[in-house]
Image 1 (cartoon, helix red, strand yellow):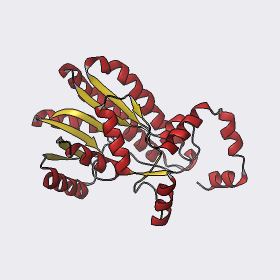
Image 2 (image 1 turned 30 degrees about the vertical axis):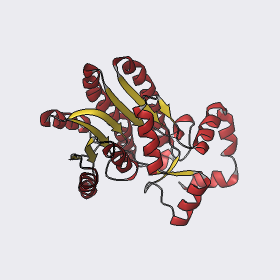
Image 3 (image 1 turned 135 degrees about the vertical axis):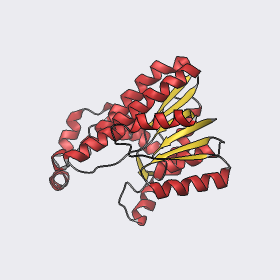
Image 4 (image 1 turned 120 degrees about the horizontal axis):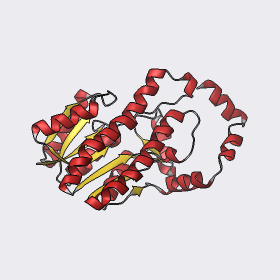
Length: 263
């Protein structure tokens, strides 16, 4: 039996990815470090769509996370036809004010575990000559971002990794899709309901549901990349052509400089 394995499936965009795949008839392997929320997702999807949902409780920042997940799937006979690498965290702080162990966690979570999951499951997909891989990057991958230097750097890694992996696998029948969302209305942002509604109305922030819908559609079409939302497309396009000198000028502005001094 074939499954879609989704990391970070218990909340936010990951939960929406699980719903998108379940309503298309895919059985789900939901992976997260939120045990209670995992159980809720499994019950909800099975009840609503009639699909099988396997719960895998795991710390995806752990060194052996990918190997352990891969081993469990093989031992249980769960064939992973679709791999959605979505789990993530957001740290808002300058590098020197960030605890070293938090830096290690974000790199392991975003980069190491994603790379190894693609390594293990990608090999099996290539042998079967079919499969889908979706990797969640970010619009921040296209420009250095002070106050989230660690976050944007990991997303730049995922951008380059996903593009290179596409070249390695697409001729074998395995598609690799990179998704570059901008600000997404998830618990990662500590905003009031009023501000969230305003930002969504302006197109600055998008719903998790719309991001997941666009991501899955692009993945199943075999697209190499997708940047959901007109505002995000504009930001990514501008970032791609603006010289780094412009950013250096912006951070000299007093309110921006004061912000950098606080975080």
